[in-house]
Length: 398
Image (cartoon, one colour):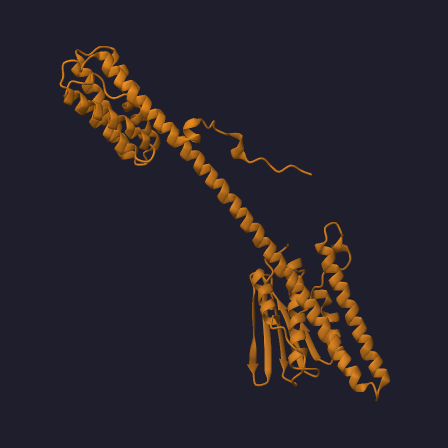
């Protein structure tokens, strides 16, 4: 067995760490880490030694809410970033926090990673950098570490933004691959449907034509069996011939469908050169047919040749079914360098008891439309019925 082709997207499988596997748990632990680290830094600086307990409690609430806001950093990155900055500013106004909250770099990263609105993301990072610059200015004269602090804040946001772009790119690739797979599946289903329709048309034309001939000949044999045994035997011989032809065409069609069966070598596809034999079969069935064709007919592409034959076959079968034996029929075939025209016209000799499938004219139209041609069928005057088919020769070489 052949192995399935590898999916191009399987070549790159990102590592899924705890932040991807358990996002809510990881974000909660991150928020607690930021909370305890900020409290530890606050206590180590000793900035709150000489302030009232109520102020200390207020500062603790700021640190608490500012840090725990990171739990919602994925779904509301901009709001979380605003909360962290406000907590840092309020804490600085009471001279309690010497530095912004430890949560600030995490909120900057989340802003770049999860904020879909580019404008809000840029505004947020600029506000964050301004907050860092404000803290550095309040601490004392500027030194060489200040640009590094600003650059570090920007890099944290930028890394998050690049990871977001990478994720979006991979998501678009996956969606495109899935779309292509759906389109290929739809094309395959369309091809199967078209092939089924083609086979159904072929089976209809083969069976309807030959069975109609066999039914008419069998009916004629039944009528003359008592008075003209030789005529009955001749009619039954025609039934046998029609049956054999139907079996040969069905065997040929099945051979084409069976892979490796060499079906194309069993029987040539019917076409323009077989029209004379087809017309003779219908004459034996009782139709009076006049065949008019321009001299030196062109060499037709295979699909046009087969469709022309099947249209004439179906039209004559309909004449036999609905007008009955004895109906006078005229076939005129003309052509040019670009198209070939065939007209089948008959009078309404008399009704028959042969049932119709209702797909004859529709099948002729489908055959013509596949090639870019047309079929018009309908009454052409008192007691007349006409089928006009126009098939382009063009590049239909398949």
